[in-house]
Amino acid sequence: MAMSRKRQRELNRLKRSAEELWDEQRKTIEQASAVLRDARHQASNYAREEVGPRVRNAYDDRVRPAMSNLTGAIGSALALLDVAKDPRLRRVMRQAGATASSLRGRTPVAPPKKSAGPGRYILIGLGAVAALSVAYAAWQTLREDDELWIEDLGDPGLDSDDGE
Image 1: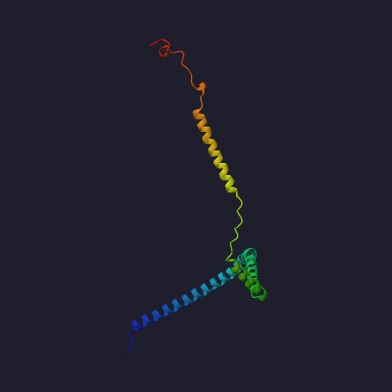
Image 2 (image 1 turned 180 degrees about the vertical axis):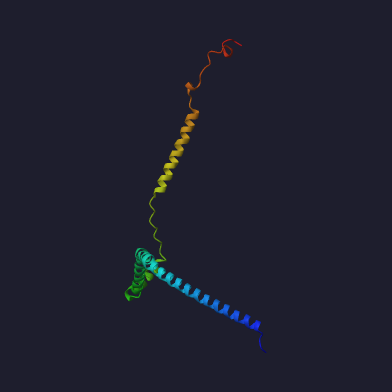
C-alpha cells in the first residue's frame, strides 16, 4: 500500500526534525563533556593545591602521633605476651600461688591505716566555724547591755514617782 504525498511529506518533515533534534542532542552532549572535563581538571587542581596539604598537615599533626602511640601500645602488649610465655615467670607465678594458698588459712594481716586526707581537715574547720558562729550569736542575744536601754526622761505621764 502506497502512502499519499501528504503523508510522505509529513514523514519527511518528521525525519528532518528528528535528525535536527539528534544533532542538537549530540552538540549538547559534547558541550557537557567539555564542561565535565574542565570541572575534573579544576577539581584535581583544587585537590592538589588545597585539600592535599590540609590532609598531609592533619596526618602529620594528629594521625601520625596517634599511630605511633598505638604501635607502641601494641608492641608493649606483644612484649608482655612474650614475657608471660617465659617458663621462669610461670614457675615464679606457680610458687606465688602456692604461697598465697598456704597463707589463706592464717590470720590475715591488717591493711595499713589510711592517712587523713585534706577533706577531713576541711570538715573539721567548717565544724569549728559553725560552732563558734552559734556561740557568738547566743552571746549577743543573752548579754546584758545597759547601753541598749534608754530611759525616756522627758515624758511626765510615764513617771512612776507620782504614786499613781
